[in-house]
Image (cartoon, rainbow, N blue to C red; front, side, top):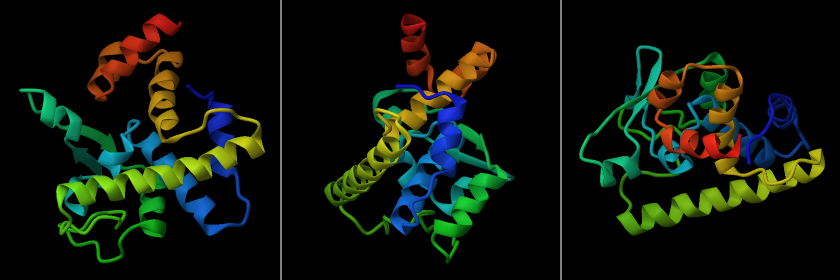
Length: 177
C-alpha cells in the first residue's frame, strides 16, 4: 500500500511518548528518505557506505540474483543525518553498522534472524501508529512502496525512478494506476 504525502507527514510527526515508537518511526522514515531502501539493506548499512554526502549501497537481493552489480545512491538529507545522530551507532567507525543491530560477527543465519526480528518489531509498532492515525497497512514495506509512488505522482522522470533501484515497484505501479 502506498501512502499520500499527508499520511507520511502524519506518521513522521506522530508521537505517543514512547522511545520505541519514535525509534521505529524514525527508522521507517529513514527507509523512505533513502530511496525506499529495503529494511534488510538498511540494517546492513555501515558508516563506510556514507561518502560525499551520499549513502551508497548494493542491494543484497540484487547482488545474489543479478549478474550486474549496480550501486544505489541516496542523498544523505539533514533528516537522515538527524536520525543517524539520534539512533545510530555512536562509534561511527567505517566498519561499524550504522544502526547497530548487527555486529559483523553473526553467522548468515543469525544475521537473517536479527533482521527479521527488527522488521517484526518495527511492523508491530508501525501498525499501532497506523491504528492511532486511522491509516491501514503501515509497514516497513510501505515506506519503500510510498517512495516510488510519491515520485511517480510528482511527475518524476521514469528514468530517475528506475535509477533509484526500485524498478520492480514501478512496474507494479503501472498496473495499479
